Length: 173
Image 1 (cartoon, rainbow, N blue to C red):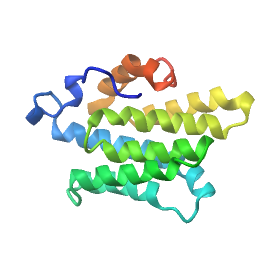
Image 2 (image 1 turned 120 degrees about the vertical axis):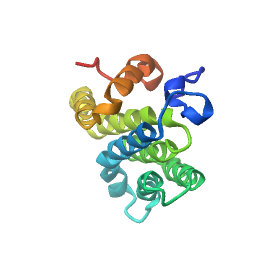
Image 3 (image 1 turned 90 degrees about the vertical axis):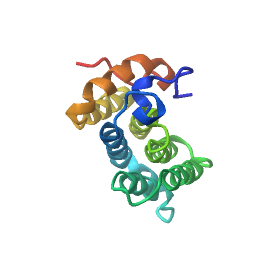
Image 4 (image 1 turned 120 degrees about the horizontal axis):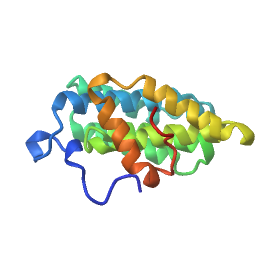
C-alpha cells in the first residue's frame, strides 16, 4: 500500500476539490517518469523484448504534452505493472516504478510510488552490503531532480508516507 487511507487534498486537482494545479500535476508526472526511467535498465536487462514499462514512461510524458488521455496513460501503467508480475528483485521493482509513473495521470499521489519503487530497484540491484547506500544514493538522485515548484510538496509527502513506502526515503536535508 503506497497510498494513504485519506487522500491529501494537495494531490487532488482543483477541479476535483483539491489544491493541485494542472501545472504541478504535470511536474509530478514528469518527475515520476524520470525516477522510473533512471532504473528502467534493470528491467530491460531482464526482459529486453518487453517494452511495456518503457511505454508506460512514454505515456506519462505524452499525457503531460496532451498527446494521450488520462485513461490511456493509466492503462499503460497497468500493463507495465503486469510486466512485473512474474519477476523478482530489481527488474520487478523497476517495472512497478514505470507503472506507478504512468498512473500519476490518474492519481497524482502515485508520484511517490514511482520514486519508492525506483529506490527499491536500486537497493535490490546492489550487492547486499551496499544495498542501503544504493537506496540512499537513488533517493538523493531523485531529490536533485525535483522541480522547485513541487519540491516542498514531494519532500513533505515523503516524510508523511515514508512508513507506508517501506521506509525508503531518507530524511530530507
